[in-house]
Length: 325
Image (tube, rainbow, N blue to C red; front, side):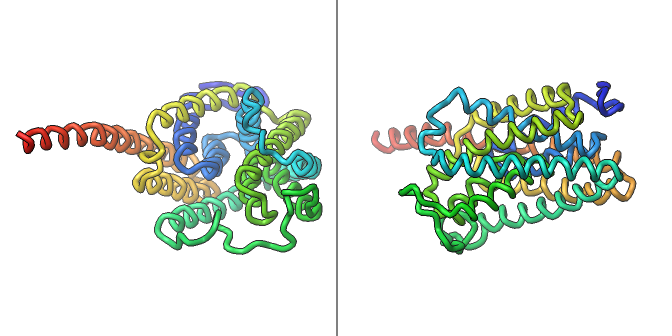
């Protein structure tokens, strides 16, 4: 067991590492929705709500900081819009961190956070299945309508009011729930502000880096930041993403991995009310076992599908050679 001095409790480092590996694998398959599982699972393993959120913020900051070494990821960014989003996002991150600290002082942080994450996880499962089995004629992302006024990003003009509320919302989600500065940035920039997808992606990365830095600084000032737990989790995330990146996107984005990820999110959503009911230890064991089982099945599926894709062309060539003879 690993002792965390700030939290004053012991935590299982193996469970923390396995969680990082599983969430890293899931992130390759379903993208940013995998972040929704991280903070609730950490809370199930015994971390207080504030420390779980600060660990999620640290993970997002580490991922955003890596992009500094690849300047090509910011080549399409709208820098003025990113700066405006960041300024309001820093205010939102500080406000979210302050509200979480105040809720922790009255022992209401865990119930509020678990209720919000339960709704977000169920909503993510619905959207994940909807994109697979539902309507596919929606342009761009899941938002079928644009909210006026649209931003004219091909010029220097844009609606600062829309950018202000988006920056505040993104920063608040980063500071209060630990979701990171890029979780909703790309979707809202592309659909609500009318940005092209490359511009929305790079602008969200640039503003998310600044917002994550501000959220991490706010949590560090609050004294609720466990560096050791964050390092173990980040190591697991790197291994999970590297393992899942060995296969091509056509394999990792197939039907079975998405269904397995949906099952993992449903399991995490069901365990949060169980924790509030007093069965947190049992719910944590069942959730960890279910997540590991789903990830193991995904690896078997990836390996089998990759082997099939490799063997099938050889069989076709052999059959064609026999027919030619």
